[in-house]
Amino acid sequence: MNFGFTDEQLALAATVRDVLRAHCPPAALRSERRAGWEQLAALGFFGLLVPPESDGLGLGLADVLPALEETGRACLPGPVVETAVVAPYLLPDHPKLASGALRVAVLPPGQAYAPDADLADLLLVARDDGWRLVARESVRLVPRTGTDPCRPVFEVAFEESEELGGSDSSKAAPALRRATVATAAQLIGVARELLAVTVAYARVRTQFGAAIGSFQAVKHQLADAAVAVEFAAPLVHRAALSVDRAVESAERDVSAAKAAAGEAAVLAARVALQVHGAIGYTEELDLRFWLARAWSLSAAYGTTAAHRERVRTALLGGDPRRWP
Image (cartoon, rainbow, N blue to C red; front, side, top):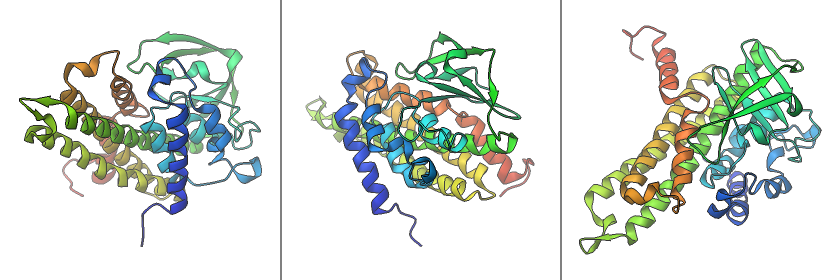
């Protein structure tokens, strides 16, 4: 059995990569909040998971994983996961979704702030008993300090909202699982870009008359990060397949994927900073955008510690004396 991505899935990712390289370069991250969005919308990116009866393609989450990875590689700003993955599941009949004319933000359960809420036309608020839908004009936003300049967070207040049609507690968990897997895919893309940039820098930066990439200490750090990414990527693919097929182990697989992807991205960020040195912190270097994205996405939809705890509970049944 072949678990690799198909030529069509990889071709879609390559197209998204080309579009983002042309319309969401690092320079755009300094001044634009919606860089590349119009071009992705014209490509049909936001309709990939929308049902065919609503003018979408009706693909599965596993089909779009490579494309989602490219949005992480490009550090694409805006509520990408929420609009392209969560909204098609919760708002499949919305007429503006497939065209990319609608932007959606999400306030997950237990989270104080909503990322990118200022760009959203609709806000989805997760509750224990389902989802609440809040229109843009009913939301009051207060900016709060966050780690990612391209992913600002907002405290949300509202008085008027409506229960999402057909919303119940059984629909909340699958939607959040999809968001978690999509975020893990973005983390893989962020980690790959951090590694690529750092390897390129290590080849040209010299010290003691030699490229620093020739030093064993640097090689080992880069190798450790590369191994972490390559081990995490299949877990994300497995989680997407589990979510698409609604298998019994879906929650465990999703948590394993998010924990591994988050750890890989944070490790890649740490290695990138160590190899670049103090210049990695500076405003002039674009590296800071990917560092911040790795840190912010690793905490989105559950921290690494929280997901590791879920995996442990799933494997041990809550009894720490048992082994899987």
